[in-house]
Image 1 (cartoon, rainbow, N blue to C red):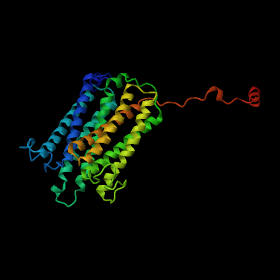
Image 2: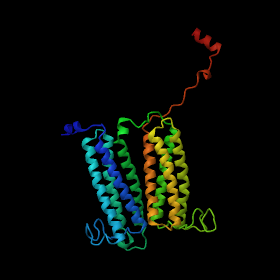
Image 3: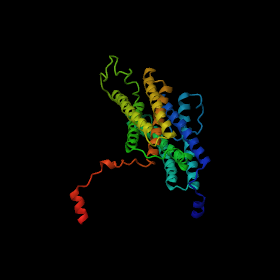
Image 4: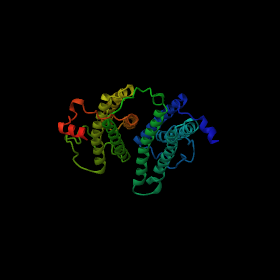
Length: 349
């Protein structure tokens, strides 16, 4: 049985599998948007039970109420993505020869299950269900749920990339070596965005998006620092400060990609995309404050942050596939010239 199964596996490009990965990735973006929108309108507790909604798979009147429509739609999309991951895992297990790619498929299934459990725990441990004065436990699960969603997106992007034609047939135009600094700046940018998304999730779930209601200054008196410090103000200010760090890391990484010897169509497009999306992301962040947290603007700001992380991760991942650029050898005219004594000693020896 195992031998028959292995005979059907191949590392060749599979167009239908590549399209399936893209399809699953698209629905994952819909899921992230639905989750972000649910948080933006504070509809996470539209139903006090889980995994059912009001004790039903299809609760009565859920389409007529915005909060129920957002939360239940988010749950349905989560179930759909879970089924898509099961299909992806089965496809990879049956047809993919590369063991590490099959393991990525298994990791995607595990991650989507854990993600669903975290979302469920966020509901079951809410203060409305456990009758406490603090909601720290539920908020912790909510933040973990939000952050794992970003990691899951990066994992799915990785699977889609390694199943694509350019990766398998090496037609991406990326054959020259890359500098070690390009890799390091990619890792730094991923880490900065990841930390920024964690801070953003804490801010959103603590309803601190308007803790500093002015932009770009931190007070009505045009001061850089807030006039008073509370937890909501501190986490909001940390998010703004983190945006500066992310901007620096992304711009340097984009510049490294642009001037790299390994630059091909993908690197050029990625460099431009990083710069363009970063500009839009900064604009959406400012607009979130200026519009007093319009739910659509805030959700798009969250979604674009996830997309920036996935794009930066993808380009960094590709950088690590390429060989490192070696230090150039010293020119011949700079090589040490042996002295007559050493030459004579060598001859006598």
